[in-house]
Image 1 (tube, rainbow, N blue to C red):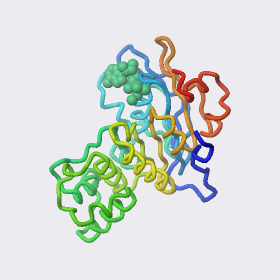
Image 2: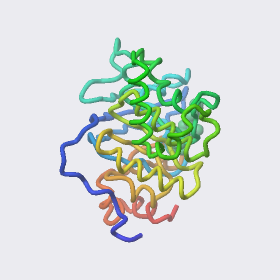
Image 3: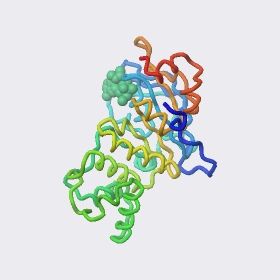
Length: 272
Ligand code: ADP
Ligand code: MG
């Protein structure tokens, strides 16, 4: 990997987005413990990549970060998740507000297939009870599709169904939909795994742009991608039947070029 490709620059400009911090997070499905005291600060306005082998709890951790973990009846957890210092699991905290502030994009693009492209973008407004006039909605559709890098391709067919787009376009539509409720954090679980290399590049460019306005946490199995799009990395590992833990976290450049733990070195160099 060439050094120019390694890590987005850590920007000088003031950060937007929100800081997200996991403090001693442990998680279970029934009796099965899948995460052990995971602590991680995801700095406002940066991209953090979560890396590690399958089954080490990356998706579980990501879902804990916006309370989607609670949707699994057998799931439980300990620890805290702080959004700008406030615990999102605090009793009485409104879950819809938390999910508005912390958006999620999944591996498999999931636009509403029969709904128009424009309506897909604004679909989240209903869920959050946000009122907007027709003109405001039109502006929002354009703004979010522009940010997701999809506007030029779809501006003349906004009334067509979301399901008519290609896989890569559908994923960018999902990003636009997430942005429409003005999140502070965007969680992405292997957003490019189902996409071809060209679409993957487009999404990576979008991520690089978006980091200026939203804090991004991305799970990826692709080490080149982690190196290209992130400023910080956290390496998860679940060794021999033990729950997933963070072995090491830090600036992407350090994690790839000079990691403290030999297991990190082996993993980022494709040795397991
Ligand atoms: P990763 O995303 O790193 O591949 P996951 O978070 O998906 O890992 O899974 C971590 C562990 O939790 C695995 O052992 C997996 O089998 C288990 N797990 C994930 N989701 C569930 C669930 N809904 N019910 C029970 N076990 C689950
Ligand atoms: Mg996963």
